[in-house]
Structures are given as structure tokens and as C-alpha cells.
Length: 421
Ligand code: LLP
Image (tube, rainbow, N blue to C red; front, top):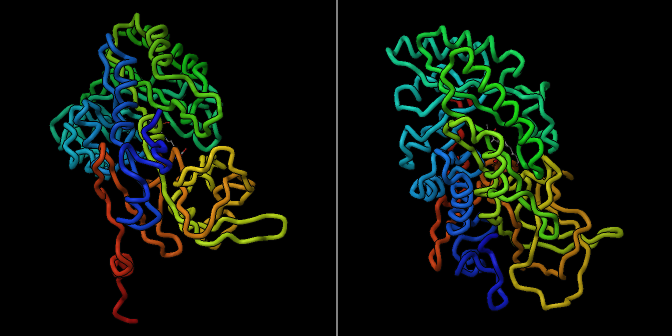
């Protein structure tokens, strides 16, 4: 459920007409709903009620500080994957003991940054990372709390580019080698092993792969405890999918997920951490764009809009579907027309949808891409020298620009020209 609904014939973000925001900031832009962000966070939090737990929002999904602050004030921790994300989380006021550091390629500088600033735990992904973390922690006279990410070799049944839990993926250590790697970690004085981490992929629409992976983690917990390791925290990753098309069957609810976590892991008495990104931010954001031209091609009509693949890369990158709806509510039973919806970038891949049925649209109309809150703004670029588009946050009947659109000069003047030119 989200808070982007038609009211009196116009699309609103909570109580703010989307067209009002467009008039204030221009198009294209991203708009997020506070109520939707909080609702999704609360669903997860409540799904794990009764278990000692922390929901660490995977901020890679949407990392504007206003979003982080909204969630942190509700009690969320953060899952970060770079020094930049760590700094951003800190800047948004997230306490260090609620920040977990994931990622396969943490650099020495990133490790030092997090050890200096404080960290809940590092989710370690390889032996060389363990060696560097141990040496860095010892040199700083401290001890790094760690989980080790295991790769359970489970097929997450999602798009190949966002599956992470198969043995051919770069993530984690093979679960078959976990015993040896935990033994090695226990011998390193700069490390304190506290648990196990697992994450098998993103946009999972079925609980079965999660359950398979968590069952393996449960068995591993018992085995490692028998070996004398103190396993008290399980980080279960993120990955629960969202419905991208309104008429699709909805993926499992956080409450079903929570029940499955209890069933597979509840008896272990561990603290549970989860790292949802998409399910918190995905349906909490729209990308709004204006139609520039309606162009008739051979056997097809193109809607050429002012948003492009550089603003929302998901369709080009993952063949992702986003519902695209007009900002003025169509009359009930209005006839539909078929369009290819494309941006102005000079690549055929700059296509958001092919043969999409839409109510007839004209130049100057606004359209909204639903489910664009996660992996939207954060994955945008300035390709074709198109400035990054603004982000807006709505709360009730208020809205605020949370990242302004840079001017052309700001974008261009970042280049520096060598003296010899
Ligand atoms: N934890 C770890 C270690 C991750 O790698 C990820 C996502 C998450 C949590 C959050 O997963 P979520 O709950 O959002 O599914 N750009 C792609 C998605 C990439 C996901 C990468 N890792 C997309 O637009 O579909």
C-alpha cells in the first residue's frame, strides 16, 4: 500500500497534488511519501515483534539524508556498503551502533573510517578482508565486531543481475568452508566473531529460497556453537520483493516473512537483523515526467518524455516494469492507446516501456512512474549532460525539496581544464 492516490481527479502524493510539485520544481523529479516510508518500516518492525531485532534499512535503495532521518527517527538502523554511505548515515544522525557495514570490497580507508567512527558490525565477505580488518583493528588498538557472510548456494529465482546467493556469485564465503573460516577468525585478536550474515538476492517474490537459506543458517549456527563460537546475531539480509505492476500477484508480506523467520530461526535465541531496501523505499517514491512529443512512427506511437534512462535506469538495465500513469485521472472507461514510452537520450535502450496501453496522452501532460523510490535517484547519472533530477519529500500536506536540481553551470563548472588547453 502506498499514499499516491487520485483525489478529485488528480494524482496526489499524500495530500499534495503532484502537479503542484511539478509547477514548483519543474520536471522530471522524484517524490517520496513519508507515510509510505514509515508504514513499510513499521510493517517489518512489527513482523519481528517479540524477537530481539533491528531493521537496518539498506540505504543503497534511496539514500537522501531526509529519507534516512525519517527512518532513523522511527528507530531504523542502516546497512551501508561504502565510506560514502557510512558518512551519509552519520550525517543524517544515525547512531554508529545501529550501522552495519556490508560489501565485498571494503577498502583499508573505509575500514579505518568505520572503526574510528564506531560500527555495529562488519559483515565480512572473504578471508583477505578478515586479514586486513584484523590488522587495522589491532593497529588502532581496538577489536572489530564481525559476522561472516556465507553464500548458501540457493537459487533466489530473481533477475540474474540481482541474485547474490549462488556459488557463482562474488558474495560471501561458500557455506561449505564456513567451519574453517570461523576457526581462522577466532584466532585473530583484532576480530570478535558475533554472528552470521546471509543475503541471497533482491526482488524475491517467493519465501521458499529465503527459507532454504535460513534453514542452512540455522544448521550452521548449531554447528558453530558446538565448535565453541559465540553466535548471538544473525543478519538475514534484505531482498523481499514488491509488486511493480498493480495487477500482478503481490509478493509475500513482511508478516509472512516474519513468521517464516520465527519458524526457521526462532529457537536459536539469536538477535535478528534484517536489511530491507526496496520494500521500504520502492513504493514510497514516484518519478514524475512531462510528455514532450507524441510522435507517430511506423506502426507505433512514441511518447517522448523529459525523463530518461539516466534518471531511472531500471527498465534499461533489468528490463524492469514500472507502472506509468497519467497525473490527471482518466475518465472511467476512457479508451486506451498503445505507446512506446521513451526518453530523449540517444540510445534505443532509453525505452521505459514498449506497446504500453495508456489513456491517450498529449504533449505537456504529466505522467508518473510508480514504484520508483528504490534504486531510482541513487542510480541516476548525468549522461548526455542532463543534470541530476531533484528529490522532493512529502509529509501530509507539506512538501520540501530534499535535493535541488543543479544548475547547468554547477554541473559544467565541476570540470577543470588543464593549463595547457
Ligand atoms: N543487503 C545487502 C547485502 C544487499 O546487497 C542488498 C541489495 C540489500 C540488503 C537490499 O536488498 P533489497 O531489500 O532492496 O532487495 N539495483 C537493483 C537492486 C540491487 C540490490 C543490491 N543489493 C534494482 O534496481 O533492482
